[in-house]
Image (cartoon, rainbow, N blue to C red; front, side, top):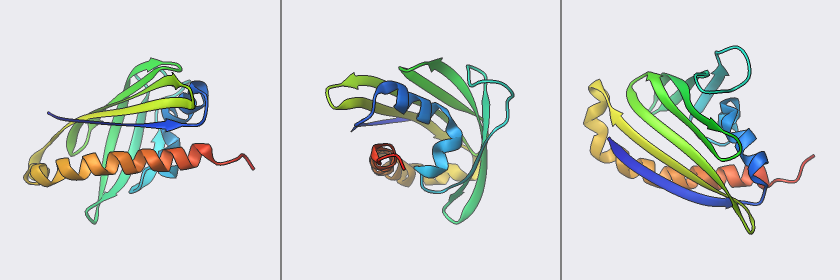
Length: 146
């Protein structure tokens, strides 16, 4: 599996950042390319909760099912792909920082099937997109409330 990570400081307390990140239905607000995200498990978010994502990637619609593998408010949230075109594990760690919360996004993935031909290109895209995506997250969460 290829592994990448990126960090950013968000000017909100860890509880606010964690609550936003762990509710994956918020992902379309800050992750480019996500067309839909739905919680498909009943009850509150916890280990085992599943989310269904539809994403546009390289002109194609891709559907992925994610399962929560770690849920430790307000410190860590992690998921893995349960079904989809790539094997993916992602985690977000929220740590108290003088300016608010330091968020670290860590991703490990393995492309499957026809997607595997994109492996060399995909890794470079992931690293640059992770930092850009965290910047968007910071913009969304640092906006004054209406």
